Length: 169
Image (cartoon, rainbow, N blue to C red):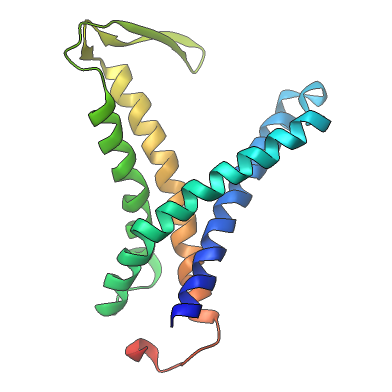
């Protein structure tokens, strides 16, 4: 069972890396031929992939495997439950970290560009609607990646060789 968990975890991490690489290269292709990856960009892409792999591995090991084990224990490690657990496992930590790291009450005003608009995220240390929207967007993206990882993990777990006694593993 440990070997199957290890291989399913590797598959989940690689799926997140693949999605991120496709998004990065795809964004360059959409932006135009001048922005397609150069030789230096491939080194950056490799470094980016390593960072994504480390973060994804931490998420899979610290959150994904324990959540899967609980779902497995209650015989619910399939389909939409696995997808929902993955989404929550990716979204909640990002939201919690955003709230914990926000300079709320500091008197700081912070303005930045967001989707082509200049928005104020913090007004005298108070989060604005834009701050919440930006963090919800980031958390939703992390949740989508975690959903992919959870579904790949579940697919790999159920397809890898091992005892086929159902939930008796």
